[in-house]
Image (cartoon, rainbow, N blue to C red; front, side, top):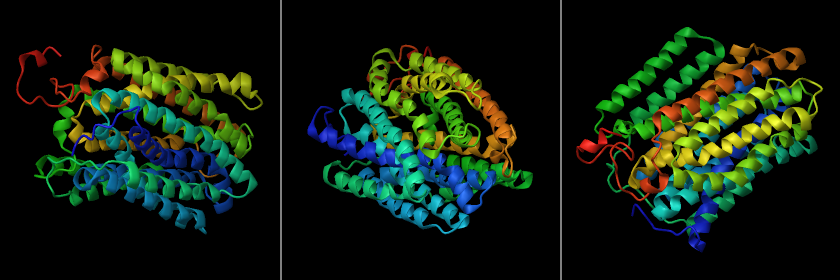
Length: 483
């Protein structure tokens, strides 16, 4: 039941792609739309910088903390089943967000949204990895990346228009028809897959330690509390110790024996930390410092996702032929250059000559990177373990975003209602782009140092296990040492 052998060009393959793209787009769409809505929500619910941070991190916290649980549940119970449950949960919690009468209620509803996202997000990629023929997985992952960009491209503009025409509450209601459609398609057309090798027991203690550790650490970073931060670090250390000793771990640390897997996840952490931090500050700066309307701020970011839509499938094919090392090195460096260009943008600059060139360079770099990076991560694990591999990589990306949004405002001098002061906001914006550029460039360096240059993705996706490329070798082999 691990591999359903769906062909990419078949009707069955198109239905699987549609369900997984719409499902994952729902979660990513919510992040981009909410970023654009932050200033308006802050005004309506009387939230300062810390409140805006919690609107984002409340969602990221439960999402990041429970992604491993979501991936494990999919491997145990069936990836389609857990994916559909997550889609339904996400839709219901989105309604709660739309109806929230105050900031506290919205934060609780956002945390509930993160639970739904944790169930559906690892399932989307795991379904692709476990369902498609090995030779078609690179193309399917590239199409998943690019087609998901279409929803993300439309989302900020549509969200900005809804905010201006009606209310920020409608941005959450967008998820309701999407969740109904995704659930219906998945139930009818997506094959069920699971990992037949996993033990039938779950890991509630590991999940609890993750939630507590990340929650305390996030609170400490936003509120500058050292004691709480120490408690968060202690809980996360406890998670690592417990998982290594558990007979049924949620996170099998054997997966990190693969240099390919570890290096790709470190690059993911750096790149998505840069991405999340940059988008959080950029969405606010466009409206508060550059005086864009919500609609204009949403439209300003569309070129990024249009480039990903157009180029990600091609990048997936290139990565499949040449191996992921070159695109995973060059792409982040290009993105870093785009972020560095944003440091020259000041209030009064024209969009076409100031922001658009930087956004285009940044988006091009992401387009080159994302599909090869994702394929490299999944190729480092056998298809039976696609759920946990996808969940680990998604967790790394979300934790990076969580820490970036929790930390960056304090580092660049954003406190209280400072985002209402254009001069302070502009300075903080420039500093944020410098930090994000450094992180993105570091992701490229890590990829160059850790990813095999001759390791083509298509070779991994055949399902064979080569040394430390696809995971721990089944038996010792002397030629592995040369890798």
